[in-house]
Image (tube, rainbow, N blue to C red):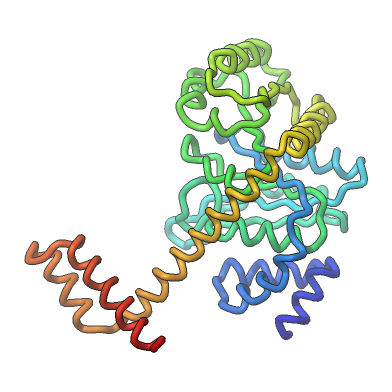
Length: 322
């Protein structure tokens, strides 16, 4: 299949073509960049929701329930569920995804699991491009569920418009962990498993932390009690998500974030491409291996060598241009 045909299939919402493109993105197939370039002007319409929080807080169940609520509201949904990769096989550990199977026959829902493949930050390196492909396929809502490994789960703010941080009652001192790490990224807090003892106390604790935040902007993150198992509190949660998007639009924050994300994305892409080009240039060159050996023996240092190799690469590129 040609890239233009694949792009047409994604734009038409054909699930098989979307899945094929996502596989190409994950495998870093160079043709995926061509497809994403053609799709870019068709993106930017979906409301992207990130869900993060500690393991055991019921994120996958919440994603399923939120999806069900959006389907009741006639919205189409894409789900990107990021899982840790096995350090031995490199494959993703996708056990939790079985809970999302209730939407597997719904043509209005597209579910894709991804392994982190060693990337830190709670999402996979390719997540942003995968979200973009799903956006181009015409989904109204895209939910990204992070790995849930702890305080390093902050990269989701680079992708999502609305970030939901989950917690559960009776989890000991994890409020302090949230406070130290991912509290700052939350647009909405969810205390899930409200049937457990201590749920109301957890809400009070989070609200107390929010009251102490001196740097809070116009939006004060609400704290929503839910029960993912029964669906209790889910309509109220989706109402808050919608309310947050309305705030982003009316306050001009959505436009500001869009500019900031575009700048960061362009700079990250240039950095990645330059690094790839440089490494390709150095590959199999004996002087590169010699430089590494000298660094290992302390006959040279990596700072000077890196500066010299980059300067030589850029000088060679300039000569080619002339």
